[in-house]
Length: 422
Image 1: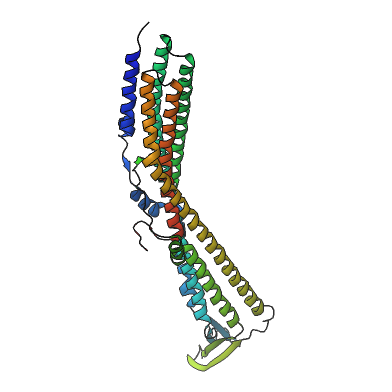
Image 2: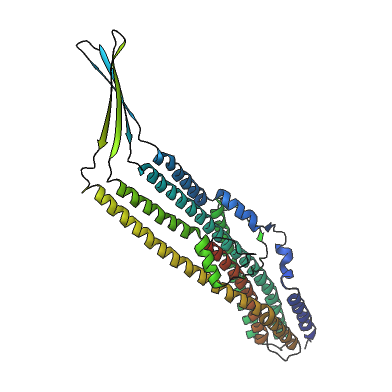
């Protein structure tokens, strides 16, 4: 009977070296991909994303209404003639309306608050797009790391299968070991296919955010470093209420509603108009008469117009206040939700890096060594390999989850948190 101790020992050396080298096993396969910088992508998104550009144009459009609201109504110029003969005498008149004092100022305030609200909503759209792009970027990094781990394990499982077949041929193994290795190898190939599909989906999503063609290629994202969060939950809540553009926009909406209510109440007061004119003879080319007139626009139908205008403004103001309360509760929820996610992910990353993965690596190395001398069965060795793979993937998942939560927390708070001190 052929001795198989040499291939088993050789396999042990190969697997242990792969465990020590880690992701370097597949570095040659993926090392050719150019690095993908996050800051470059963020700058591109801010310059090209259609949602951001549309929000900016809405802000610009509302800003253009301010001088319109503060301007006087257009004057009216009239021309008339009289006499049995056409154009014997002509009359020219000009009429200018003057709103009651304070109305133009209030109309300007309403337009200004609306513009400030549009600006905050434009900033909120930018923060949302940045958070979406960061989340997609970090998920793409996770996919690349998972692909590395799966490809590494495929090579190890192929070695497992070869060794199981060698042991079975010489009567020192069972056929079930071969089948189990083949099943796990097929599962890894299935996982590899799924990860490749998810990578292409993320590419399409990032291209959508960047306003690129859906098939535009991407490089490999850089390894993200965990953001150190030194702020407490109460401090984050205070920052959110100070800097969140969504809350600022809602506050501007309330201020606009208050100015609109003041304006609606001012509509009870009459507007004025001045009419100036002159009459001239076209035959003698002499000025025959000049006249002036002052008039008042009387709010006669105030019971059906101005009164309901005030009720409309009151309802809109109360609605804006309720919207502000809703937005505030939503922001505070998002702050706490992402804060606890960051804390959980930070604890799990530390636990996986310092305890679970080193222990799982030692367990697999011990299982491989025991399998080489016949003290450990094949299924135990295989189970240790799959556990290590799950732990490695979980480590990268939690690192990515940590940074995604930070990005969403920054969106809710309204300012960058990296390096921010209380």
